[in-house]
Image (cartoon, rainbow, N blue to C red; front, side):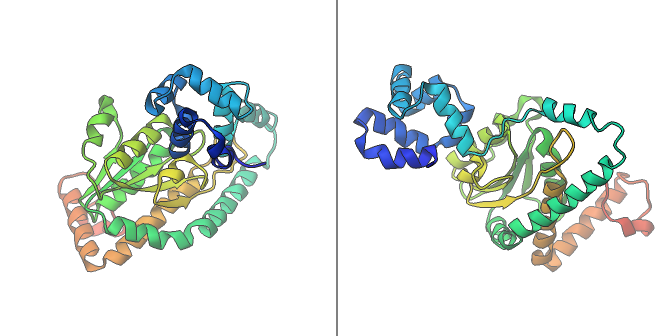
Length: 293
């Protein structure tokens, strides 16, 4: 069966002008259908709530919630709750093989992530290298990936900025977006509201977007110029971000290698400053471990 977006394209010509305006907005902003209220969509699409209901019914849905669910399915949003997976995990309380199964799955995640994204890393590097500034965002479980990427990248590039929204400052941090900058945004299903908000703000500001996500059909990938995929499978109740961390580390390693001697000088200066400031307990003579945490 065709996706809802494909159905809209196929049936666009048969719609009234008013409904065509709605269809055009939904095709251009599929993630908003899932993350925003019907009233918000109506304001942005220039349509009243009754018009949106009539639009959904014209396509064969009972109403707006059913149409919204179809868009969510298109975007690869799963409906398996963490609590259900937790119940399954409790059934394995005496299973000595659980830890082994988890590490086996993580190894498979890494292999899948490598296969999916190795060829895309080159294009991602080119995108970042051409940008005047790079902004990095990830929230909730994705924050660790975004923070690690920004921390390592900033060791040899000053124009890297982490958006974390602490103290309710996310909107203020977004004011730093300029046309031509790149936003690296990290999220996976169910996608965080903040990640989608930041991505849309970056797009509106003329930034280019690099998405680290779980599907080419994710709302972030649909807004992105480049996408790097990572695999999240886990026998635990929560998706694993280990492959996402590895993907971010691979990206930074490639960027450093391509930056050459200038990266070496910047990293050396950063490391020396960290030791002089007392950030690390180890003396400069025992720096074999590098700029750790």
